[in-house]
Length: 200
Length: 200
Image 1 (tube, chains in turn brown, yellow):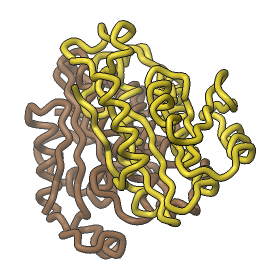
Image 2 (cartoon, one colour):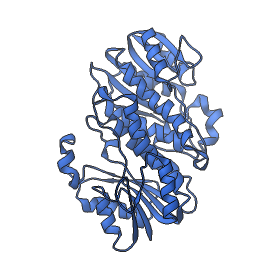
Image 3 (tube, helix red, strand yellow):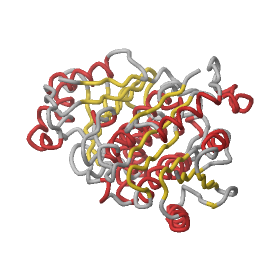
């Protein structure tokens, strides 16, 4: 299988990449690293990436930003950081990527626990995650060519514990192995339109 | 209680307005109708509306557009219709409106069944509804001044049956009385951070 992973060098990305490249051809995409560069907040670079990579069997996105700050401090423009990147960046990956995805191929997007259980300072991040959950359910009804789409929503992951644990009091970190399995399930299994929630 | 209803002349808005104005002072806002004009997709008009209306005890939004079309036909710009209106329009109403909401006041936003159960041609509409659900949960953790916020998510409503039933096969229309009660619960009750789902 030829698999394109956007965000292949990130905290989750490198674990998923490492697992999949044992038996598959993995093309690693990233903003500044990997085999090919893409900034998902700019749909022109998405188009350019797919033109260069050509048809694939699986597209995995483990990328996307959103601004974390108190609601009182978030400007309208701050909300658009997440909208352009994690929300519309992933929507555009599907809009454009469906034309480069082989028959029977799958999309796997990424959100996180905030969609269901937000914490302090995450009004923007929670919003874009929730948007992607409903988008995935909706678009799964319309994909053709036997395409499937799912989204993986993990709680605080073990390898990001040091960086984020202060934001997530009482959240038991999810072992990376369990996170990796959720992506494998979406890519190699049969789920479609599912929000694959990963808790410790 | 002084209550500002954005979208007061809409299908749901007029039922909610009629119920609340029996015992409260209701200011009706709309894009082209009502006591005061506002286009929620333009935050400058939101600011202007609040400056004109002054402090209120309750802000209800039953407005917001999104483009309904096949995923294959939706351009990136088409997605931004819903993002600017139903998504960021409602976020901006809270961002700006919190400065005009009296102590103990409430916000009541509006989404719909699509966030949880999308139908054909609703990738954009479902996405913005899902975004608002997670936003409401997140922002309820941060509001000060004893403010509350909830969102009402109704299935196909009785008074929109003729217009929308073809989009919603098998959806039993919700009686308007039940829809109205959900808004009353948010405004006069104590819920906070809740998605008030209204099914037949």
